[in-house]
Length: 300
Ligand SMILES: [Zn+2]
Image 1 (cartoon, protein in one colour):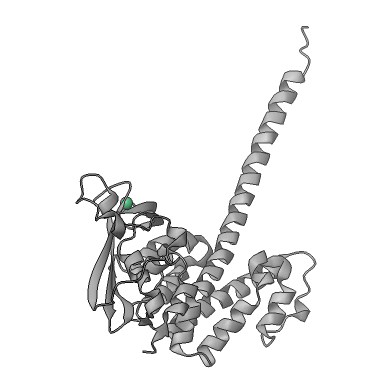
Image 2 (image 1 turned 90 degrees about the vertical axis):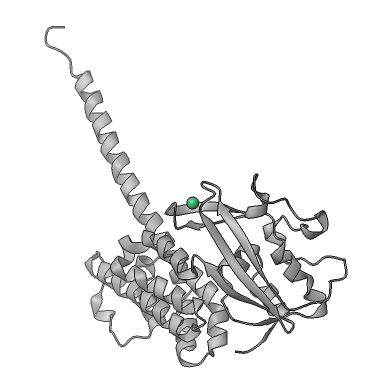
């Protein structure tokens, strides 16, 4: 597999959460002398990040195991200088130590229950950093997190987990295929909704239309993020037909998050509709009660 410079690692994985949760396994990242200290930042990370807990079955906050009372003592101060996960990869002024081949594990526990753990395994080898494993798997973490999309995608929400699973195994192009299927389904369903709506002229619709044109026609029936970011589909198509495995792996997190943003927008819209209906019903009830009280009684 292509060896990538550490500069790209910095660019793609700007936070420790990304390093732990999004970095694809077995992809080698070269570490130059100026960026060797990044390894120590990851290895000695102390802090928290939010992640789906497969035991709690909901989102939780995880903290590094050495920061939990009752666990082994913290390493010397010089080895735990990274606490702010948002600035994980900011370099230090100290000279980085010689880079030796080694393996290390970063363990985290759920703040709700110390028995719920996540661990990530890394290896430094011949001047490169690579992630060699994690438990629970990337696919398991995503599977639980994606269940909330079942109300929108039906059982096809599992295609999101399949995309994540392929990505976790270093298969970039395959992961793009599943994401594109989900994207196309969103367009198809938007067309079905539009066809039921007042003012829609279905004579303008043809299955042979380019997807950008379909999005333009459906813009008032699509989540705003999708309508405003038609380039998502172009990247997905290019990934399947032209991009390399490495390029697809590199772009995958952004494209997947874009699709999640679209789905989240749909979930929020549905929740808003339900809330408005509930409020309208309650207001009707209040109005009815108030009117009843205002009816003058005959004996008064
Ligand atoms: Zn938990």
